[in-house]
Image (cartoon, rainbow, N blue to C red; front, top):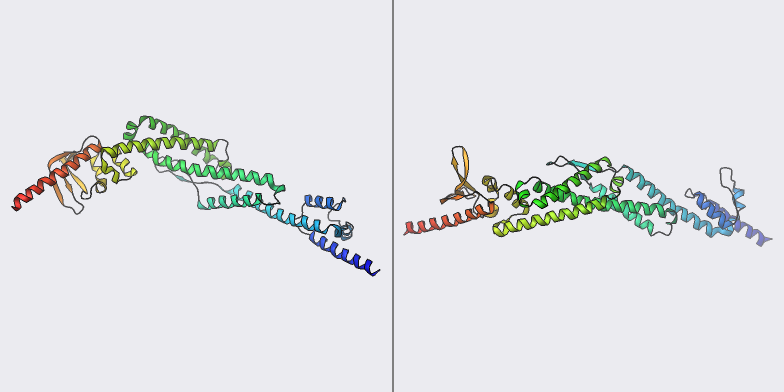
Length: 348
């Protein structure tokens, strides 16, 4: 009798422990169905369920299964909470915009917060995929992985295309000299410009990050624009290289400065601001005046400290900029030799 009583008490303690486990709020209907399969019994759990009903399930026989099911429900509840928070976050996340000064277009601005959230959520999803409790959420997690991967790719490529477009827009659209020198690439950029502005307008209509970046075919369009912009950049670089070969001092300045020099080549007074980068000792040139109008004939040169040296012959600053800058170099050298020779004669 004692042994029988001891067995009953032990089974009761085990069953009560199992009942306590089953009070966990993480349990869902699917977990109760799994419990039914383990107990090999059908039952309904609702507000009218009593302790006696649960004890009748003889839970002491399946204590390990109960613990496994409850542990699984807790892990799945954590995943469910993360996915719910993720859905709420991305439902409210929108792109920021700023106005492009030259064109007035609204261009995308990606905040550090957005990038950080995107990276963190991708790591969370990857961790979920490696969990042994992923089965129930596999479809939802895979869907979020696809959406955020698309968002990541599109944002990265978009910003790369946007930066290149902003850089080249002022060159191929704003510089008549470049359009004349590179007509085919200028036409190519015109097509790129039209396409990208269309994408900007379209994105502005769908500011939500996930919805906007997951539009069908968007990534492929950006990849095409990226390739076409690379062709424009290459053509521009080759063009600048020919100018540098013609006038090697152009190697001293950046591509941005060189483009500014080339675009203002027929206005020598505007090019003068770059002279200190091309010559150690020349700050600006003095041009011959005809009434109130400045001519393209340089009379002399000023050093940074204000010292003035007059050319022994006027320097012609008309025509292509690399040619008249070579004229400046020749005038500087000729005048230098002339004044040195004159100084030696005077000293003697």
